[in-house]
Length: 261
Image (tube, rainbow, N blue to C red; front, side):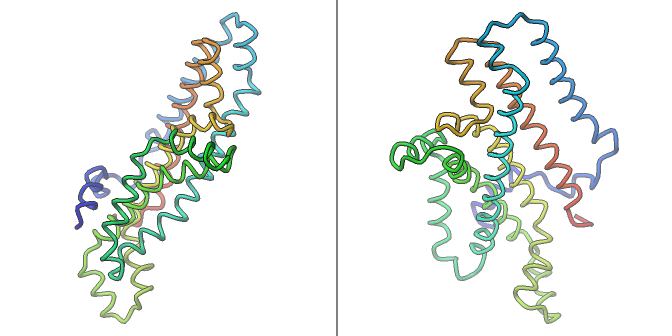
């Protein structure tokens, strides 16, 4: 196990300790909590006498548009992250990449240390790259590390004797990868995907500064007009969306996890 692998593994809950599926009540707890939070926000805002600025930011159409934009930013950036990070993680666990693997991992880790807002500003100022596409690029750059490292850790933790048995049965290299290594790595890879999803939901609020929309528009509108209620509702909706996406990813993890893991 590499140093990187050891470091990432500490953040991964051992799948063997988790039940394969939760009870029905277990699946319903989080939706009930999130629905209650949304109902409380709705009742509180409805009970307040809003001024024109608050009414313009907190009406249903504005909130729905911002939320949908936020979901699009999160979904597209996470999908692209998977397309890039999983194959790259597979590639970096192959023997022929052993020489330059530590340098590439170090470079990517240093890249993640750069604040997201700095990446977005660089794209906007240096390359005049604004809007949805620029935001997706920034989010992918920031979320790629968790998925990449978890993919590597997942592949490296597969018992070598299992792989040897597969090779001994005449399975090709690609067959060993797709029939043994990747299925046995699914729980750890999915843990990285969940981390990337939550990261993207949070950092997507910053993309409002490059005109990409999302719930960041609501929060910044509250900050620029000194309206605390708008700020709280924007931040609370972002938190609700993050918890909802993590919950849905958890359900997907329950059903995608191979039997016996």
